[in-house]
Length: 392
Image (cartoon, rainbow, N blue to C red; front, top):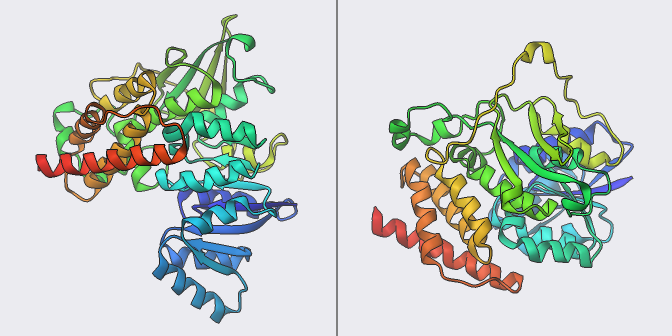
């Protein structure tokens, strides 16, 4: 029986994880769940899965949850704050941690899981974007295991040799082909992008996701962050990673080998597939996802990414090549920009402008530890907020 902590259990990845877990009660037991402030959803999950622990970041929401669970006679212990997240991610009784908290807030508990030698199902890409070298070092030093959850990285993981060492040359890997849907604005008139509303940006054509990641998909920053993540997961430099726009989202990514072979992983666009793969690895378990009907799909299309339409993707490649503090700055400025856009404080087309200004304005060296990375993150957020004040 695997004891599982789900960080971010009320988000789309967390809900899909619990859906898969519920299909295998003989294999998995929910040890702990966490959410930011969605106490109603977390209460319902606690009623169903009866975890030993529940953690919320919002103190008021934690108090409400604790009271409701007590009234319902459910003995789940409720705690609050970042330290509590780290505790449930590193608890000795936990075998597997689903790291699905969106944004920089997901990094501390993911790090705690790594330092505790846990099996980490990594859905929080910002952990690797912000602190890739430091995090991967912690994983190796503490004998932790990372299984990627992003559909693209999970597909790459499946298409690589089973005991891939992280060295493309020794495994005959020529390139990683990272697929992208192109989001909702792939074919929209560029002249109209400045008028995009948050509601339009959050309507992804293929995937059901949270608002932040939906906007990232619309700007293609999500793919840019995945490029940086792929670098750390698979040891591929920027020149070995190619983004392929594939509107149908049926091929989730590919690996090209030196003999000319290309191995691809296909499936319906449903996150339960990579989640089930990681939960059961190296076995295959039922996910609840239906069979892919190739006859209905009939045709697949591929395009070069348009860096003029999607400057965020260009900026991500730039940050990866620049290394040092650049990826941390990129991620922090993007989080501020997306939040400002969702709140109606800036236009959709201002998102990459703010990010590029931060990349040019923050002159910081390579972070030597996690505290240094968090300080760079803080500086970049402050810069972005000040930039908005000066340009609004």
